[in-house]
Image (cartoon, rainbow, N blue to C red; front, side, top):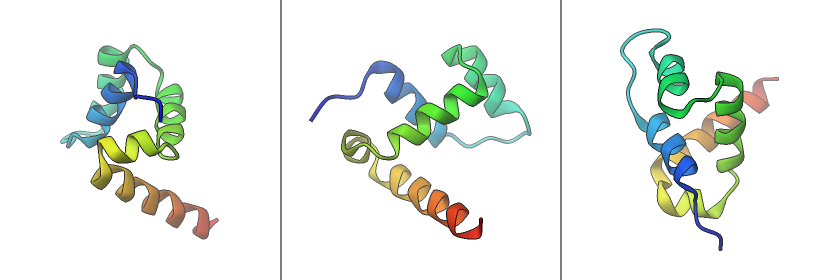
Length: 75
């Protein structure tokens, strides 16, 4: 099992935070991770399928997997 990179852990940490205002998360993605919102969500979606991410943040990953599956079912 490969380990998560520092960027992977930073993406998960940012996703776990609570956001009070609209746009604050996207601003943090640009400023803290130097990523576009699109690239951030691509990386995050890839992390949802990795066992390493599940081991690192099981509650977050399981919650996001449920949300993703719900979105798929609605389409």
